[in-house]
Amino acid sequence: MDQKQQDAATIAALLQRVTENYLPRARRMLERVNKGEKISDFDIRWLKERYADSLKTQSLVSRNPEYSQLVAGFIDLYTEITSKAIENEKAG
Image (cartoon, rainbow, N blue to C red; front, side):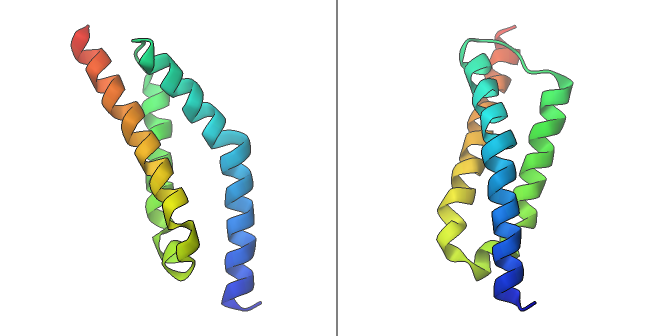
């Protein structure tokens, strides 16, 4: 299998995982922090893992730049959740 085929298979798997699991969970988490709720240690660990995942995709995205905005959007979403969660912690 050549690199394009490998990338296509990897991207398809990632998109399915993101669509079915990561995005719904991130949206629920964003709703909670926007309501002033704090996030759990489990949530923090999950966000760290997703951020690490996004860093691991850099070479894949560099070969397939049409996905760069999508990855950037997820990083922005995770950053928004994290920033709001920090505000909520500071607020007590």
